[in-house]
Length: 227
Image (cartoon, rainbow, N blue to C red; front, top):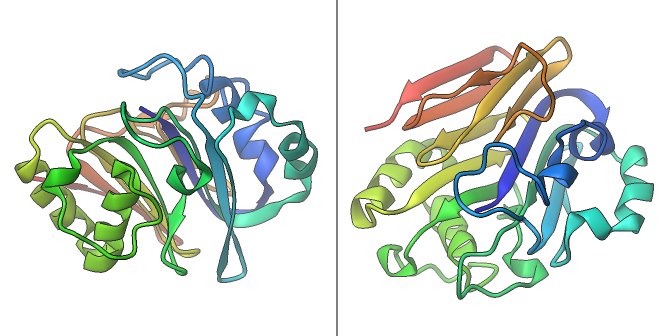
């Protein structure tokens, strides 16, 4: 149910994170290596990045592997902070650009890898789409990202079958949860990658234990258990 990736560090080309790696998101859209649920992520893609402190997005309901225009532009897009995703839609959810991560409240970019019963979520007026991920993003934005761990635990208590891997960034912080699916960290000399699965075979990738919150800042990486 989706693959996503976040970057915080020096300015890099978006293509170097999403398209160029041998097992990057473009490959994960049709051949993910660690995805537990589903075989394809063909129901859309989105790339968000920060232009200074302003979040920008490019989203599509089409498969990433077929988007030639993005492939031609991505090498020219550079940012110090990126959130990107490829989507496998939850059964019954709409397939449209507005249902594709990353979602935003104007300050944060957020992606959800997983599934949640919409009936378990509080009603929020600002969801970008009726889909479960957009509804969940609206709840997280309303509660505030500093409460992300508590929000995930509360939603999981209301829907024990939920998978709640969330990835969010505001230009200076990356936050992620591992709750029901895979998450990995790569600490590079020029920054840090958080990803649903490694985009290459670098020996530096570390798996995040399930039910953990990850925070990345200029000061380093912090892992906190979630209960």
